[in-house]
Image (cartoon, rainbow, N blue to C red; front, side, top):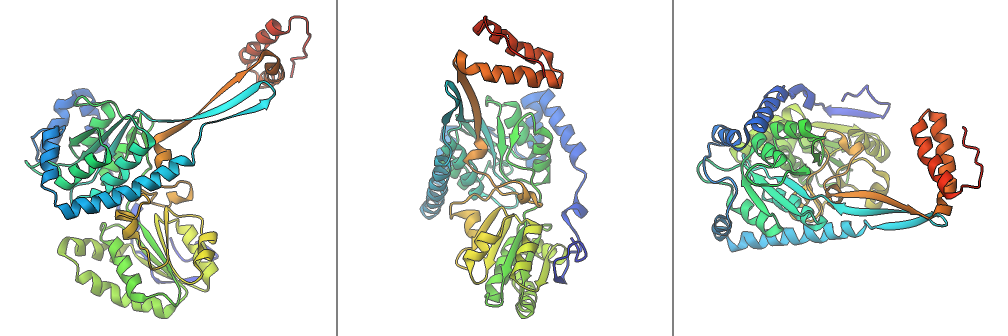
Length: 440
C-alpha cells in the first residue's frame, strides 16, 4: 500500500519495505507433489514424510493410554488455564450456534419452504506445534467443531522428533472433544485428514492456522474439502488517539510482531507525538524479547510495519477499513463511535482493557481469523463454518400451480425446454381440464 493509492488524508511516518506478496515463496509445486504422492501411496507415503520433515517414526494416532500419559505430565495450573479458556470459547460458540435455527415459511398457502442447519460429519483441526506449540489453537478449533455437532473431530499436530506431540496440545484437544489425535504435521498431516488415512474418516472441512506449506495444501485441496479460509501471515492494526498510552500501544504491536518475520503490524493515529513515542519505544521492547521472538519481531517491524498519521478519526477509520486487518484494536475515546463506524476486520478489541493476546488465548472469541484483507468479505472461524444451511420445500397440488406456470414460462424464455416440461407434466396431471398459457 502507498500514500498515493487513496484520497484519504494521511502521512506515512513509517512505510513497509515489503508486503506479503514480496515474500510469497513458490511452494505450490512442492506441496502439490507431496499431496499427489500421499494420495497415491497412502499411509506409507505419509509416514515417509513424517520421518523426513518431523524426524518422527512413532505412533501416528494417539491411543487412550498415550493421551492419558500426556495429560498426566501437564501441570495442574496449566490444566486450570486450559479449562478456563475452553469454557469461554465453548460458551461463546454455544451462543453463536443459538443464532442459527431451522425454519419453515409458507410462500403461498399450501407451499412451504424451509431450512435445516446440519453439522459436517468430519472435521480436521490443524494445531501448529513447531516453533510455537499452539495449545490455544486446539481449544479454538476443536471446541467450536464440537459445539457445532460435528460427528468426528480429528486434531492434528506436528510431533517432536521421537517424542510425539506436545503434552499440553494432546491434553487440550482431548478435553475439548477431539475423537482422534494425530501426531503428524505439515502437508502430510493435512493429506492424512483429507484422504482419510490411518483409519480416520475423510474430513469434510479443514480448519486451523499453519505455515505457508499447510496454507497452500489447504488452498489446493479446497473444493474437495471445505476450509476455514485462505490464510496468509497474521496481521494487526491499532487505532490510537492522542489520549492512548504509548507504552501499551508499543507493547501490543510487539506482541503481534513476534508471530513471524512477515507478520505486518500497523499503527494508525491522529497524534504525531504518540506515533513518535511508539516508534522510539518498539525497538527497545523488541530487543528485550527472547532470541527466537526477537528475530521474528525485528524483521516484522523493520520490513512490514507501518505508522500512519491521519488528520482525524474519520480518516483513521477509513484507513483501517481499507487495510481490513485480521486483528483490530481501538485505543481511543468514544469506543461506541468506533464500534458503529468500523466495518472491515477479523476481530475487534475495544479499549486498552482488552488486547489481541486475550483473544488469541483465552477470552472466548476465536483466533482463527481472516488475513491479507480477507476481512473485506469474510469473518473468522465459528460454529457456522462447521454447519451447512440446507433448504427443503413441500407443496400441495393447488399451491404448486402458480409456481409451475411461472417455472414453465421462465424456463422457455431461457431456452431450457426440459425444465419447462417438468412443470408441464405436473400441470397436466393435476389440472387435466385446465388450459394454460405456458409460452414465454
